Image 1 (spheres, rainbow, N blue to C red):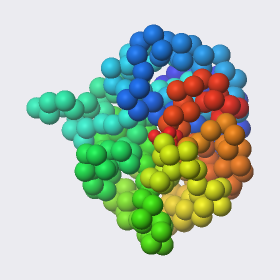
Image 2 (cartoon, rainbow, N blue to C red):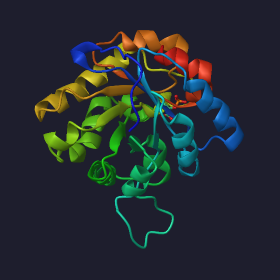
Image 3 (cartoon, rainbow, N blue to C red):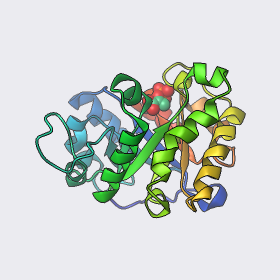
Image 4 (cartoon, rainbow, N blue to C red):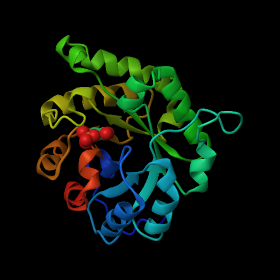
Length: 253
Ligand code: PEP
């Protein structure tokens, strides 16, 4: 991982505020170059990172080298190597200097039928290679309306927590209600805090309550501060707004 040159603010519990951009399947060499260059000189209160599509990892590594901005990927195989056509392993991510990898993003859970156990296995594979997994969890609108939000998150987290405190203490959790991703409809700070507190309690239950819990779902410069004012919201996982340098930097300012 490259050196951290900023002086990030610690939030409740001494945790460092962390803002990670998820570029999803967006970008091209020219646009990425401009976006990455705009992030480099930033002096921010939060640590920032970008999770880019696999083909652009080398570009991110080169463009961000020596800066305070770290980078990562959006998925990883459970296997370290072998006959797994199309897969990308955690040691490969490590080769490209990845500090982070998203696992269990709702788009992968829904479009690629990723199970809770597979997500935990991916987190384990990332840790084994020295890459920090950002484990994404979140309920659908139907599940929220049925009063099941916390129960769904607890179910999704169960195989992750079963990896034990030593492993979980090296992870980051991102709470991303599915109904808030890319919809412009953000969870209110109180709605998000309620779930974050439940996640914290579950983590506390295994002695891993000190890790960062990020909120994701239509986070923008205009709503970040109110979300970050909540005691268990330690930063954000940002999709759409991470593609616009000024907006992303405003979130992390
Ligand atoms: C995401 O993709 O993880 C996300 C939170 O997207 P958006 O910020 O666009 O809602």
